[in-house]
Image (cartoon, rainbow, N blue to C red; front, side, top):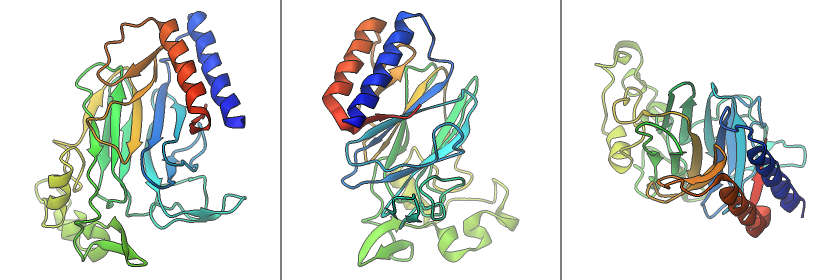
Length: 285
């Protein structure tokens, strides 16, 4: 019931803003969706606007709003066990023992990275390893605005040398840098320059499976995406071709939507959606 009330209150506040002519696009809205079979614990850093971590059950959605110049990252923690005080541990992606992250997660983890401004730059990085499929989609933006990410599950085909195994199950695929800690695999020392930091036999399978994600440190050309005047949907365990929606600039927008419906009609549609989804929708402002 509490989640219902929160969702209704959030949508009603958006409806009021639309009817009052208040622009919502001065900030950037992130919609985080868990399409995985298990609960995940997304981490967000820096976390000065909404808290740096929370639990997200299967099919559950949460929304947070950042400043238009935010630079940060979003990732999923898996296999976590937190007590009522928010203290605990995770099998992958953990940021110390806290539910609320104050710094980056520990590898291996699939990471969505953002540098927002007049032009947004965003990518998904597997440089620190892979723990879950993750896709980033801009909604309602201007420019190329391509989807970034990795919608393949790399764990079943992970090399035995990189596989992170717990109780006989591969829970993540580590990076060669984390496992071997050499300058060549970590792109440091004599291998720090872009011309010297090259794909390896360990990073190539990552790139083959996930062409729209970073596979090694200088994999910029095919991995960094740009967009302007947009909000973002970050989905775990989803396809890059799957349509996702969020509320953007006074309208309920979906990647690839025409945006022909009026603001009020779209807002009412969002209200109905929130009521129908009930506790699966929680809003963080």
